[in-house]
Amino acid sequence: MVDRPWQAPPPPLRANVQRPPPGLAIGSLVAGIVSMTFGWFCMFPVPGIVAVILGLVALGQMRNSQNPSGRGLAIAGIILGGINLAFVLLWILWIVLSLVFGH
Image (tube, rainbow, N blue to C red; front, side, top):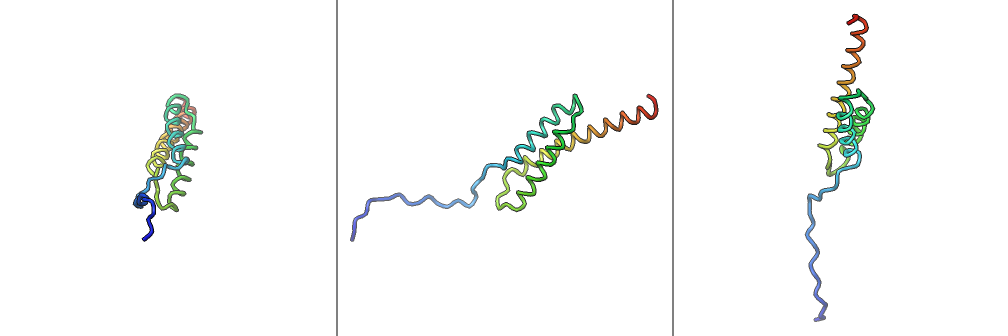
C-alpha cells in the first residue's frame, strides 16, 4: 500500500447556489426609485420609462435562466416605473382638460 498525504474531501455540491441578481434588475429598481422620487415633483417620465424597459428585459432574460434571482427587483422596478408613468399621464390629461374647459 502506498502512503499518500492526507487531503481534505471535496466540498459537497449544493443544488441551490444563489447567484447575484442581474444588473438589469437592479438598474430597474434604481430607476423606479428615482422615477418615484423625482416624478412627484417635476413630472419627468424618463426614469419611469427606463425602469419599465429594464425590468421587462431583465424578466425576459430570467425566463431563460435556470436560477432566476432578482425577479422581485425587476418586478418592483416595473411597478414603480408604471406608477410614475400613470401619474405623468394623469397630469398631462388634467392639463389638457383644464385647457379645453377653461378652468
